[in-house]
Length: 190
Image 1 (cartoon, rainbow, N blue to C red):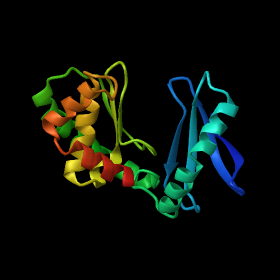
Image 2: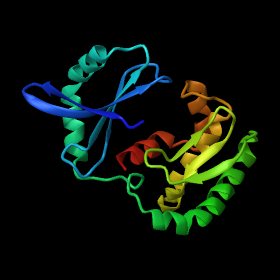
Image 3: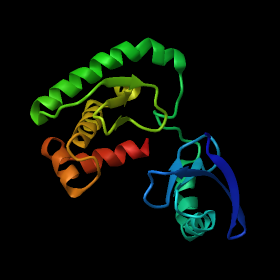
Image 4: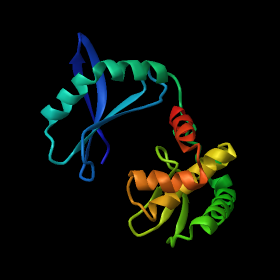
């Protein structure tokens, strides 16, 4: 189901955002995605137990930050958000070979058991790891500098051991990618 678009008045200006109810979310969060519109896309993710009123209060409390971040991202599009189905079909096989080689390279150091590896045309994530141990990656890893692609693969591999973002998880990532904080920040910039 697509996110519901809503508008709220904040300090005399109208702020449009997408309301996303997520049963797995533990807290209310705001994400701003680059986009062609002024201010990009503002997505308000809300856990099942939170009310719309609580969510909008949270958004109002963080409105200044939202507006500032949205201005920075206005008119920008990340590599991930660009869609080109033809290019995806053409490069999927190459991405599959590339990713499997990266997983094998890094997992030789970690030795984790994983399930299937799949390549997708993901719009918001570079990679993901399911609770069953299946790994999924965006074909656009091919377009990243190698150290960034390495970070994404290591990040998802480490979720096989720590299915969270705890200090133990980041320590695992840091064993092989010591500059992970810097790389993660670059990836978020798009």
